[in-house]
Structure formats: structure tokens, C-alpha cells
Amino acid sequence: MKKIIISLWMLVAILAPPALTSCGKDGGNEPEPDNGDSKQLSGSVRSVMTLDASAEYLLTGPLIVEEGAELHIPAGTLIKARKGFGSYILVQQGGKINVNGTAERPVTMTADAEDASPGHWGGLIINGRAPLSGGETGRTEINNACTYGGTDAADNSGTLTWLILAFTGARSSADVEHNGLTLNGVGNATRIENICIRHSADDGIEFFGGTVNVRNLLVVNPDDDMFDFTQGYSGTLENAFGIWEEDYVSSEEDPRGVEADGNLDGNNPGQHGQSDFTIRNMTIDLRTAAATTEGYYMHDVLKIRRGARVTVQNALVKGCGQAKDLVDMTDGKGAGNATTAISITNALTAPLSGVEKNGTAGNITVIPGNTGCPSGIFAWTGYNLDAGN
Figure 1: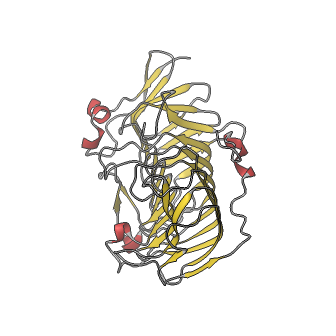
Figure 2: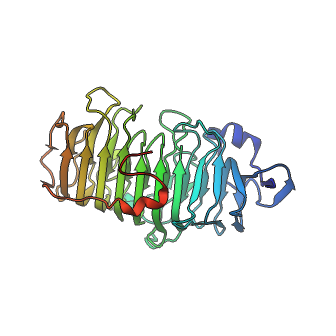
């Protein structure tokens, strides 16, 4: 296959991405001369760019979809990312990304190495104009020059369908790191469904405010939380399946199934518009051996705190792995909202090392018989949910 250089970013942005001060606008998206056997991606998309599914792409630095621009990725496209914090795709407010995978031909974004490990590259970040708690304007964690949030609950950042993200979560420091998929103030006119996130070095998915709804999400072996919500998120996550494989070990201090904060970092308990969202049909499958050694057990299956109000319907946690608390509603910066309502079945074979419910807030119902997320909807990923792979 041919190799085309598409708008290389400034060299410093590739070699030293933490020092970025501008959010895109440093390059165009015009192709350059043929130069090998894979097409290289980085720089700014300023109009409409459509990738070629018959080619293989190499992400060599930040690829920024600017306001008013569109990036179209057809079914079957493969994007491999060079190792480093600066290899990521970011969609600006007013930009759109359309990942048009199908069950037969998903789009894959992964590492450029066969022996890749979690944190090889950044991941996918979408910045929208939907509301945040307190009506704030947010600044993207990996590049503070890139803003998100606003007043348009129905903002549209495009479409993500049948997408695989693997080996994401590169970090520049202990406090600045990517997730698998980061949704910043994304609006509910954005369509996101049939997503698989595998081996991310931080959270599988994190919602920073916004109203976007996500359906059919599989997260495998995130280093930290499977599903993370903060800063006033108010959508619905439907059909979510999280897995720890048998050999899973976390480097984080408190890996969880769900972590929900009402406001960003719990620093604004008085803000209006705290996180208020629904999780419907969720399975958390811990396939590790039972253990109480740090890194080998889940701290909380559900951690609801700092003013977050969550409705969890038909949740199931199962497997032979260890969990400390089933549901923890407490936190030093404030408990979860007292009107939180959770229905969960605990089918873990190992007893909890902590408690079933920590805190007095919320209507927490632990019952038998919940079925959780249907597993057959993830056949398109090629991942064997019965045995792992």
C-alpha cells in the first residue's frame, strides 16, 4: 500500500506533547508525497477528510478535528498509533467524527506494535457543547487549550459505531493521562453504540458532563475504572459489560467498576446540574482469583459519591474475583445523592472483603436474578465473552 503524509504537526507536538499550548490550528490536512506503505496521520483537519478503508494508517502525533471540520472513517479502516502521549485523536467543539463501522467490518484503532501494553498511545477524545455542572467551561485534561461544555444538550459531534479501541491511556504524569474513550461535554445528538475498549491504562470510558447516550459498550482490562462519570453527566449508558481477565493486575490505587462524581473532583458540591444519569443492563465480570492484595481486587463495584445521583437498573456482578465493597456511597468530599436507586445482583463466588453497602444514602436493592448485559451483542468484536481471548 502507498504511504501519504497527511499534515504533520509541529515536531515539538510529537516529541513533547505535554508542552502543547494551542489546540490544533498548527497545520492543514493536505496530503504530501508518497513515502512508503502506510498512510501517516497527524495535524489539523480543517474541512472534510475521508479515510480510505483499503489503506493502513499510522497515527504519528495529535490529530485534531477543528471546529466546522469533519473526519469520516469508513467500515474496516485500521489505524495504528505510534507509541507516546502525543498520539491521539481529538475532536474539537463544533467538529465531527463519523466512525462508520459495521458488525462485519468494524473500525479498529490500536497500537503499532504486536507486543503492545496498556498506555501505548493516547486514545479518542471528543469535546462537545453540552452542559457541565455549574454551567462551567471545561478544559481538556491532556491539553488545557482545548475547551468543552456549553448550553446545547442536543449538540452533535458525529457518530461512533462498531469501533474497537485498544492499548490506550498513555500518560505524561501520574495526574495527566488519557482514557480509552473520553467524552467531554458531548451532546445527545451524537450517536455512540457498539464500542469495544480493551487494555486501557486509565479508565475504559470517562464522561465529563454532557448528555450523550451510549449503547452496547464492552470494556476489558482497564487499569483503573471500567465506567467513570463526573462533572454533571446526565445521559444513559445502556448494555455495558466490563471484564477483568484471569491475569489482570491494576497499577492504580482504587480500581472500580463504576465511579460516579456529581461535580469535577468533588470540589464544587454547591453547583447546580450535578451528575444525574442512568445505567441500564450492566455486567461486571471479575475473572481473577480471589485476593486482598492491592492491585488484585476491585475496591468498589459501584462508587457513587460527591453529589452524583445514579439510577442503576438490572446490574450483575459475577466471577471468582475479589471485591471489597459492593456499593459505596461515601466520600471525604461528600456522599452520593440520597435519591440514588440501584438494583444489583451479587453473584461473586468470593465473599466481599468489605461490606455490601457503605453509607446510609440511596435506595440500594441487592436481589437475586438480575441478568445484566446481554453478551451476544458483542459477537462482532471477536472477543469470546465466555472464555476471554
